[in-house]
Length: 298
Image (cartoon, rainbow, N blue to C red):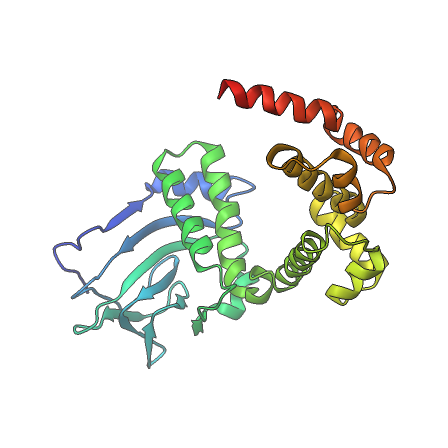
């Protein structure tokens, strides 16, 4: 038995034609995993489904907010915000929305030869805690990406792209720590701390050892991470920040060039001018003159 309310405000859904599913089952890329139905039901009061013989596809229900329930293998599971359940194909089931706090759900039906890759996350409630690095919105955007592309038609490139997105979407649930990029978040923190330390010490003579010590890394490790993330070594990046600060002094103060040079820790005005020229393709004197000339026209 299948029943549903007349409609939910803001609902959307796409169901692929059977001939398209046949093409998906034959294409060497899409046959791995492909979507047959996809949609979003917001505030889905009275939403209810019962399938005694199951369906030919696996059904993913991603509860964004609210509450609902799923009955599968004689067990009733409650689903609430940021919880997911995948009902396996050909298995009897029923599900519905809580009448007092109806769920809003992202849902899709999918099948393919490589369903077994995601067997560990099928048939159970999966909780995805909302944390600072949970990337929930990224996952919802990925879902929207699949929906929008499927809505653009069934050409092979669209279908293949959606299949890869589906794999990524499922992987973001199966490999939750990796999806949240815990390691990269830590690296980003280290790079950010390094840059903030540099910016706070533009008028002090600091070394690579000082920067590495400030963030708790060895010099060699910091150089490797910093270069991978910014494409520059920490020392080169620090010099760029010093030149950036020099530009500010040249534009907005009456400090003499030699005063700027010594303030920013250069050996002497010549060394400062040489470094500035290399970075800005113009001397400090010319930079100040050009800026003030431009300022006159503004």
